[in-house]
Image 1 (cartoon, rainbow, N blue to C red):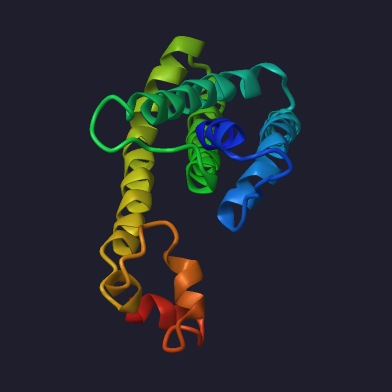
Image 2 (cartoon, rainbow, N blue to C red):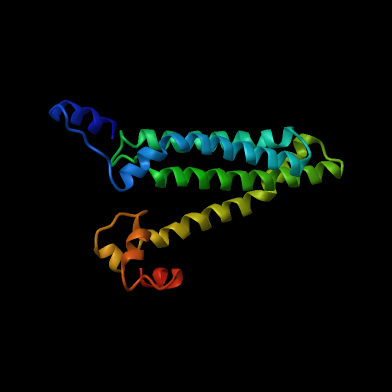
Length: 192
């Protein structure tokens, strides 16, 4: 969008202007709000975790995993321009990052809560963290696989939406416009 803005500014004669429309307009209007919402979401999550664990240290251990996961997601988005079809910074990638934050926070809460219970039973901090990580590894992997497989159902959509050639991620707005898919969410999922 930055490239198009710069190219259009040089091509248009004086007195002419352009405006974004549709998803592009929404993206430009909400670009500044995204960082503020991410920051407020992380702050709110930190405060809720601090109240839940009654400690300032345990939310920091959970946030260590969140920072690593978000930086990994951003690295994948950035490096995809060098390998194959590039992924873009759009509303869907931002929603994916928010889902990633939620999933990593939930997994961190599972491990920290179980480690705290083991420490109350008299185990050392290292032994409690090691056992909590090994015991909670299976539920964490199962949750992650279920999330990915839930998205694969949307990816393999074969109804009207797929025949229109609409890309993955924008299928729901097109399905709402489709007469056959407009009844309810369950009918949309069963016809696609």
